[in-house]
Length: 429
Image 1 (cartoon, rainbow, N blue to C red):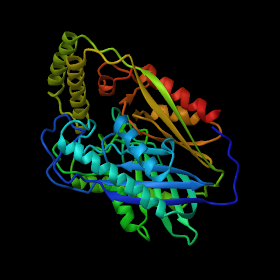
Image 2 (cartoon, helix red, strand yellow):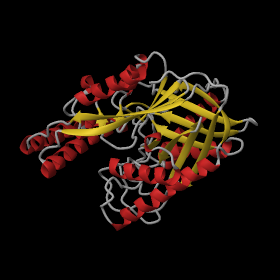
Image 3 (cartoon, rainbow, N blue to C red):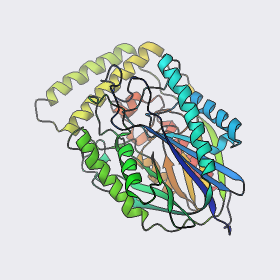
Image 4 (tube, rainbow, N blue to C red):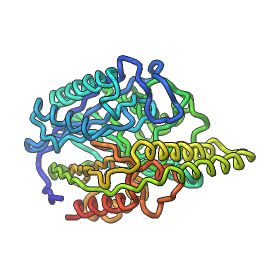
């Protein structure tokens, strides 16, 4: 990354938000067991934007309450925004929160309703950007990180209660009013289960709505998903319900409020963006008969395990393992093999002394830790589900044949290593 020098002037920032809830019922994404169309709205889905300007350079960060986004659609949206606003395509980051209560839209050719929603969403994102440009004013930025407990934990080990950190960038105008807050926290927002058929931003949607209503001046609050591939509320939630969503959402909200009051100032040493396209090797699909035999064996093992009392979290481990095997069998039937390589973009936004690192998939906490520990000059913030969705970047030491993440990922175990090393190289260059 370029070594930026401290400037006398402050950044300019602009924020905006818009309702992106589909106007018609659509299939809900995220739970294999859920079939059919959505049935109403629990919390309106939100699209939000955070724009930063320095010396004529503008960066746009867009966070959408969706499960994921595709590269083709994202590229189209960026071109459209760039043409309409003049913001460079490479300076636009679009991220999904990974809510499992949003519309299934990964394929824009999957029906007229989805195609219509894609068109509406593109126009709404443009409005977000235009409104944020109109909101520009000189701002003081604050940045910090805070550990959080009691909210989530490792998806496979209930003893690992520590669920990472929340990273916070707070923007205040010269009068001292909060304009907006950008937050990144890595966690699967799956408090609502497959039984839920209503649109919702789940954990992040609830927390940011509460924050906007509580904070003075009702600033725009964006919560992006970070390194949450192996983090969820599987062992901390009491049930999968709206009541539990409120309880855990309030924990997240309270931690953000506590942290946002004591953040140090982020000095303006400039703004810089780097992007890098990487080729990732895909995994080999198994023979169909073998995959079916493994599914049969796993079902029998699950029957044996169910003879003892399993916790809700333990049940979810078995259920996701079976769902992963079914997904693998479906892929084997439909494709027989993946293309040998897929391409993904790493996007790094250097904002003063911090680096916002956009990754096109699901990142493990181990990966985040290794990146941050091996970068000397900048403070990194990992943002997942950015600009595309390539699935899980599973660390080689975490790779297990019958783990859900390994089963459903199209990438082989070398992908995480390549991605991690390249990010470290860029940040230290």
